Length: 336
Ligand SMILES: NC(=O)c1ccc[n+]([C@@H]2O[C@H](COP(=O)([O-])OP(=O)(O)OC[C@H]3O[C@@H](n4cnc5c(N)ncnc54)[C@H](OP(=O)(O)O)[C@@H]3O)[C@@H](O)[C@H]2O)c1
Image (tube, helix red, strand yellow):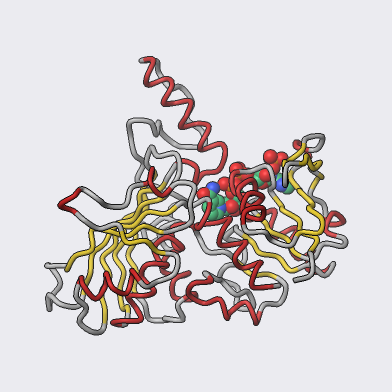
């Protein structure tokens, strides 16, 4: 692999910082790192392979000479700057929602549709974090029995709202422990500590939120399953890191919990943690700061009409790593 000039857009944020760690851990061939953020961060540095690298302001010209951009700075910034980077010859892997459903932009989870990177025209999108964590374990079950429908509830960590979300939960936990009122709760609409909030994203006309429709729209594109039906409820919970999901999946053909377990045990990116009798199941503290999606509570959906073609499971994964940074670096690996 020839070494690449790699820009990280949003290098000071939760996902950007994790991207730097993932590039280091995975030995990505970086010739030169270009950390980019807002004007607020100019003058600061990020640490890469033990060295401080100055942060530059993200402007169109900052992408001159860059081969690969790993972007984690939000929809508006991605829309404004990534076409400029492409115009200057870079290939961009973007974590925002901006381009995910565009027809000329592959939306990729390497364990599922890594081949789709081949038809990119400069931008490749990383899926929504809850979508990645749910789909990685559903894909091997689809190979066994043909996935037709997903009913999911998510339990999403505070760091899913970026550094401001993580900092706010830490602050609120301190207030709650001290018996003090929490006051202003931004970026959350309500106090999150000792609470949960059943809204992530904005309201849509159909009474779902913008976050809740992503698993369907993105899942159909990633798995090449245009008629997949998905019903999702997304909930913010007072967890620092790692999203959890309760999923019931329906299939064309019968599938037993044993077949599901066997397929999951052989699947890349998945670890089966499933022994109810021994109180072993996926939990966010166990999946934080590592890349595997833990899957457990695997059981038959006894309410399914035919009783044999639906499986219920619980999964957890680090949404900053596999839900964002690791997945993006895996895509960047496919590019070299
Ligand atoms: N957090 C997650 O779990 C997660 C998971 C999957 C996808 N994502 C997506 O990843 C993206 C980043 O999320 P995050 O959680 O890392 O957010 P974050 O912690 O708030 O970081 C945001 C980053 O964007 C930079 N930024 C803000 N305004 C900018 C501007 N005008 N020009 C250039 N850079 C600017 C910030 O730089 P400054 O420090 O200079 O402000 C910071 O580096 C979002 O699209 C998010 O939806 C997040």
